[in-house]
Length: 117
Image (cartoon, rainbow, N blue to C red; front, side, top):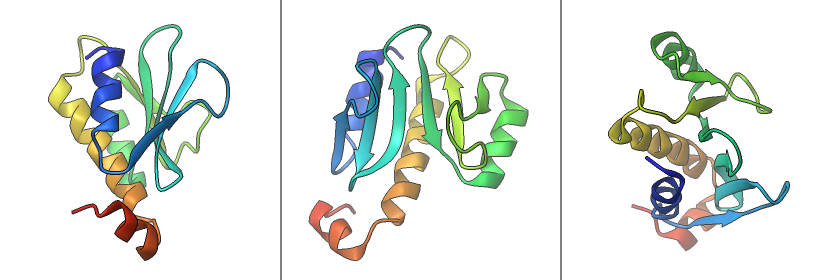
């Protein structure tokens, strides 16, 4: 998966938006104003994704390309190195997991506004 495909997939999530709140190279994806993914447009392609704490540890043990979240809470975030070792289906499932965790934490009003099913 390349950066354009990754961007398109993240933006395909209901209510997803993109912005550059930190600098000109850190692309952030949000739902309901909360971050569910971020990536740096410079250097090797990686993405930070929110993750259930137990699952985060398990993924790090299982996959060498899954690391504790860079500049994030190591308990709740993983950094995925996107290269030939990770297939698109797996990466998309992790984006979905991150999105779902963040969406679940939103208020009922925001969820209703997004109309996510």
